[in-house]
Image (tube, rainbow, N blue to C red; front, top):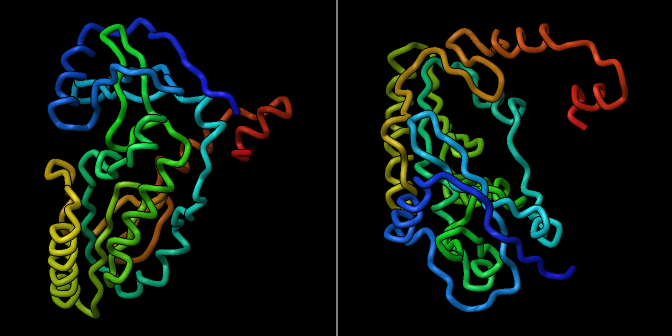
Length: 241
């Protein structure tokens, strides 16, 4: 497939400051030499008022190969929920940015802005293999930890026991092991997104409780409120195909 170079789009003025910040953090690097690929960008607002910078690499994605790493489902977690009574969920801080790109991959992620061209030094949002690559790296980092599961950038710690006291002790041991592993593997966690020692926890479209797994009422309601499809495209949207 031939390389593609796209011109910069109109973007908010706040992007300039954001780009400067990302350069200081060594997440991106300015490019002042020709590159085969140049993508456009998409600027998305975040709930905290900041912005998220994403590639729009639709042409690039057609040339990228995916690793096809499996994404966990609730069925993968069920065997570990026997006598589960307490849960903690932690969030990786800017998870994709924790994956460093080699030089060749970095050049593929070059993007255009009104303030010049840049390339990502860390894995950006938007490229098709990103989710699977991050899931694979995170799984490899913590795969041998008992009672610890990952989905995307969420890490779930499960405390099991015949009594709540036993479950809390089991949970605390597993949580310490997770923190020790994250420290050893340089995995950064977001302290503002920790849900600590809960007896009820939303997870993969379900609610984990000390009494077992329940359907998430919000997900059920969303399904009930779906409009009945009137054509083939509508049926495919519901089926996710």
